[in-house]
Image 1 (cartoon, rainbow over the protein chains, first blue to last red):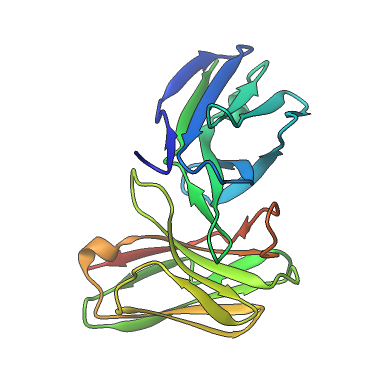
Image 2 (image 1 turned 135 degrees about the vertical axis):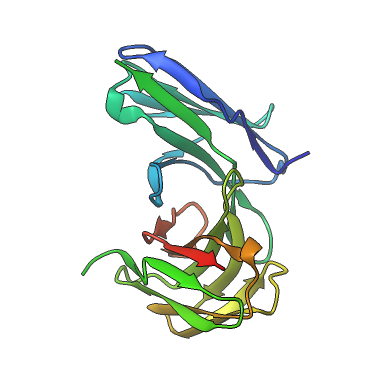
Length: 111
Length: 113
């Protein structure tokens, strides 16, 4: 099983739609979770951290389900500018603090 | 300049060349990272430095040699690379504290001929 697994997509959705991505992780001891956004040929940029209680930032909502070992990202009222690849990131508990990245889920918002 | 910068942004080199990638962070972070991103693959962690000390080498071939002279600068020295090493090389920095995110530089797109 991969350490961090995402559906690669692409998810093609019309403007204004609501879309949700899931990500599963294998190490139950992981404690930090993030969603990053990566535009084509650019570096990843932090979209939001994911907290146990869930968190919301405008149109974006992130949830963590520890029991089932997955995190989710919900995007409401999709904009054309939301088109990007969304990377799920989980820390790897070890002697050195490091992150494991999923392959990313590609989103295309269509006019 | 702010954030994390990387030079050069693009690099084409032959298999017998020696080149270096440079990363600089202006965020006051203590941890710096090198990642490799190949097409259709997840980011692969290569090296981690914390307070200038290498704390992680993720089974990277010796043709990649990192150097971290201080907490703000990180280099990746390249020699006798293979065409399959062509990728986007990303540098990141962070506080090294659990729960805190990493910040990435724009990357160096490397092509090995």
